Image (tube, rainbow over all chains, first blue to last red; front, side, top):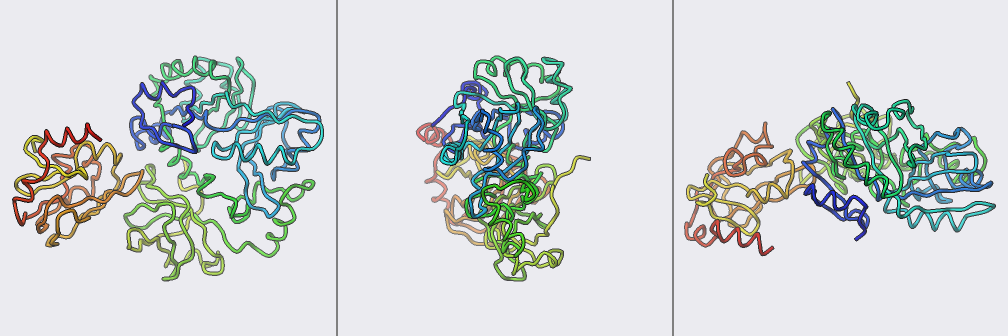
Length: 358
Length: 123
């Protein structure tokens, strides 16, 4: 199994480890609940070195990325980032990723760990023009997240407090962005393993006063799901289109041609046959990946992500349903259930995010 | 409950001489933060090694098995409001149910505390 540069830190902290897409990653340190609440109320520090980091450079870089991604990068100024999708011709999702514009001919992609190799092959096969695709397999990544993230980071790097949401800047041989996967304010730091290894203990030390906790993938999952953020492999895959996944807001039909445009345009006109819904349970229970969703006794779909929400103290989840069996205009009706251990637990469809900061 | 006086299963449940049962400290660590406990109905008659409870954590749902045969005579109702007791106090406040043991020789055959510690080391 692959190890991140922080592996020995996690070991020493007695983290519980799991195999995540071939990476030996911490799933929890103190406990998912404690880590989740630390990020919502104070701050948490995540090792995100498993995420794929890819540079795309050259005069044709912008045009190439505009062609293989669904969001419109012409809206990006150097130093800005955006959430975007890589789609197949049929509109199904190859990966969801973050794209940063570092300069006019210089872009930085953060892709899912489990999809890095597939994405690279996908891009290399479609590469046209004068550009280089440069993966950074030795690079490391950290995410500092939570309402006190800025207070902690400014103790070490006062200048970074000024960074605005979705912006990225080069600082002290790191790329630092004000982004994250938790719904809280925070920063993501990308650099060489040596740089971030030196910084990691300092962040933990400075963060102590603020209640900063090292956090694992368990809390990363509950935090992202409370926001309704999709997880590739659960909520996104090569069987569901960008529109079915409810990510039409990052598909910009008014830009120049891009892979998947024709299929998605057609689907937009006819309407997708399935859609992702967000639901919360009205009684005790924890929905989980693969559980069946029912409407008035009929199977209408399947849960793709589910958990017990630590902030809301109830079961929440995402799942795909057949539009014909559960039309949007009947979404408010009672009769929605999740089957949990042979029992049907009543649920209600809700708007995302599940959790909103008070 | 003094862990030294309890008997243990390979599936990490404990049972006392009076029929009180729960999960071990090792089990609660593995289960992680408990968020719901689904307890059996009082009066249910179970064989040994029957799945009678479900303990749900943020991570997953876990079946909990009866260590011996018997009838469920009471359940820990405190767990509905405070499921975290299973983590905080697996041998005391976090007990799951009490059963009337059908045949005490079944309990005698389970692992002692020392044997369970050995079992944990060997796995």
